[in-house]
Image: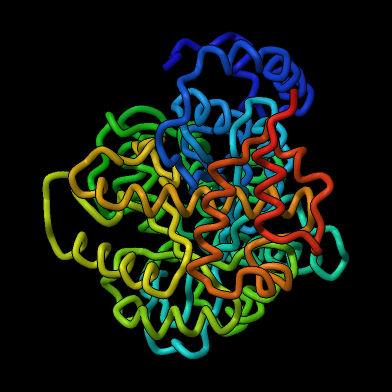
Length: 446
């Protein structure tokens, strides 16, 4: 794998549009040589990489993630951002240039009335759940679909501003401004808690220095802060976030039933937008996740067909414990329900690996499941792009009514298809059978 970066590659992660445009042009011009020097696709890939459109701890753009995925030999790569699809077009375009299978997803928080008394996967918040929608071809364009997406961003911004006001008061004399200090940290104005934390750390370093900076954070956070953690080490950023913005902190905003869209509403929007509603799994320790059969049945009734796993949260290499047991159990449950299962590392916290430990003893038995899920989502994306067909909808219900058959067919399509031969789907339509579509893909042109 190539590790040496060319000078132009640094420009992929710049927030200045003009500089990024030049870097993207160089990437397109270098695509052939990048493909020649990259290993063949050999591992399932990362299906859950956040980009700098929400928060990536390394500042990676969609283009940079696609480039790294190609060089790591990923068969399929997926990005997911909170409350935005602003990276969708770039990720898919770079994927096509590099002949890399790409999947775009969105993550948000929803309210689940049926679980209003049970914590699900948002710690300490009963009835609130992280939920995903996977397999977008582009940002939703019809007004009614785009309006829902704008509402997600606006809800997030309102929560951020309310939290910022409280934290400013708590950290006085340290103050930051949302427009001046936070929004410039992301290219599309889609700030998260982590952007606010980074802004606080950077502003503090401008006001204080050395031992004074350490003393300030020690006083405000109630925990000794070493000068070695200054000005913005991962440990310090995580501490600031936990002590100021999470439950018990001055900036924590207690969610209400109106804070987030209802689960059923979000899932319905995802389906109408051509994506697949996806349940996000934390680690199985909460009351809600200990009732996963019930929770998955509820999701399935409103269109969900997939489960997302963050492996690093669910196992320690060389350790066989309850977390690992619960991981195996939830995947067995998803497979028994004929759901898609995908995995990936978030990259929104420093130290996270770009590629999961798929060669570990603990994850090795799951690789086939994760790879199959990645192929299915890619095939769904390609068919949506070229023919308006997908894993959900009238065509799949008519031609592949048995879910096990549908999973197998889409997985096979995900193996056969690549961005280089997707054009063979150009004349495919709702009248074509699965067999006819595969026949066209298998045709070798002289």
